[in-house]
Length: 397
Image 1 (spheres, helix red, strand yellow):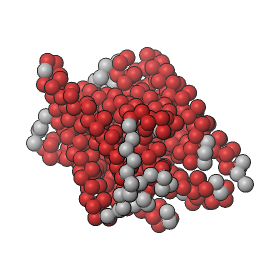
Image 2 (spheres, rainbow, N blue to C red):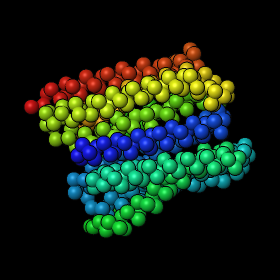
Image 3 (cartoon, one colour):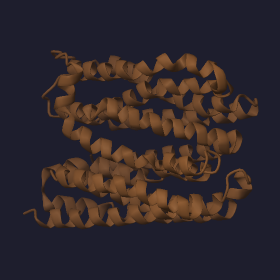
Image 4 (spheres, rainbow, N blue to C red):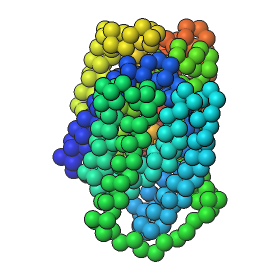
């Protein structure tokens, strides 16, 4: 990808990040702490289930397709195989219309989330493998724009659970529809289709699955906080956690550009690429710090007292996205350079430590203790990966 293309990706991803942050803030204010916490916990649990059911198949299939070892037909078959598996969650729809769950019945829409989110991952990986970066970014922007449906939903005072779930599901659905249109218009050759069974695919993707599973377990920290406190009392921590991904988007975009360069194993190219994007990373850090201080000053006025200690928790939660971005970038580059065993090993320790540290922090000082523990652990592991990346680069010739 050219530097101009890289800037386009970063600029577009920043817009997507801003849309996400604005939509999340408005959603949190409208639905309140209890509904926001309830739906956020449901998403966290579903994300873990999605990761286990896919078990690295998306990463493996996209790598094999990019290397021209499998055809588009085979890639689509793998995607559809995992889509069908994730559609199995729909059998639980009747549960949301019975007994105590009836009050939050629109949460049944989240049962569509596993199939749609998993499919979205395949779509993005496929487009990047084809170097269709503009199309990939456009779909993300359209997806995030759908989150702003919270504006008319709140204006018409619709159901709060519906307000949380519908924009997310609508964005992913539209992304899937548009992807099919893009495939039809580009007329990419399908090629010979190899039909996989679940166990055969599991064996092929097991190494990628191990890395993705340890990664997603670390995102279970929000569930730990909610279990120790309550869904409502943990809502500020959960909101800070939801802010994390949009705020690491610059680092993710840079990784998107640098991954093929890192895979080349050329020390000079890697160093030059990192130096080129250094100013962009520093700008991202400066903006994140600015957002953190703005939330410290104004978040309680906007969200209200229902989100307990929201200003200080969001302040440290947003700051956590800085070392988290560094961690994502350095671990991604290490994997691209062939050091995935080191990444998997450190990730396994990180997943256990983040859950243990957040649990202890929550017992000591609630959501504030949890977010401080998370900031400390993420910072340490970001530093570990940075040192390891420097060592790996220096070992290249």
